[in-house]
Image 1: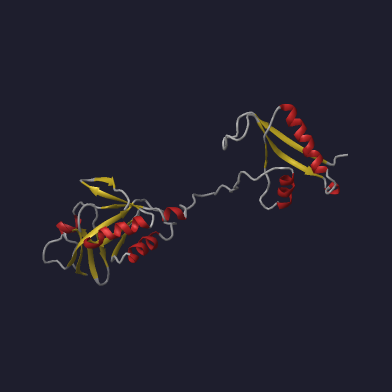
Image 2: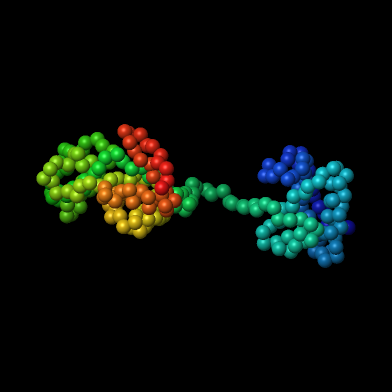
Length: 244
C-alpha cells in the first residue's frame, strides 16, 4: 500500500548560484503523501529516509523547491531545518515580442547635438525652401492648415525669416518601440522641474527635445539627476560626460 513517496535527484555539478553548496548536492524533486495519511508524520518519516540516503552517499546539501503559495509545505520544511535561500520566478514565454520594461523608460540615453538650431515659421501656402532640404543632424518640416514649420540648424536659416533661434537639441537614443509608454512624460517632467522650456519633435525611431541654449546646462543636470545618461557630441563623435 502506497502512503507517500519522495524523489531526490543528485546533481554532480556545484550549484552555480552560491559557493555555499557542496559538490555534489541533491535536489528534492517531489515529496507527496496520500490524502488519507496526511497529518500522521508520514512526511517526516519520508524526509528521514531521504536524509539517511544522502548521508550514505556523502551528500551534505539538499535544495527544496516550494510553490510560493504553499505556506504549509514551507512551514514543514522550515521545522526540519530548511531556510529560504532562492526565489524562483515562473514566466510563460510570450508568443510575440514584449515591450521594453518601464525601467528602460526611466534610464534613457540622450545625445546633445553639436550645433544650435532655429525654429522657423513660414506661411501655410509657401513651398518648402531649399535650405530646409539640406543634409544636417536634424531637419524637421511640418505643414499644417495654419503654417509651414521648419526646425533646422541655425546656420541654414536665412536672416529675415521669422524664427526662434539659439536652441540646443537632445536626441533620445533609439529606436524606441511604439509600445513604450511615458518616454516624453518622464523627460519633460524632469526638464519642467528645472524650469526649462521644451520644444519636442518625434520621428518614427525616436524623439528630439530642444531647449534654449542658455538653459541647456541646467537641463542636462536635471536629466542626469533623474537617472538618464546624456552624451555630449563634439566633432562628430559622442563623448561620455561625467555625471554632475
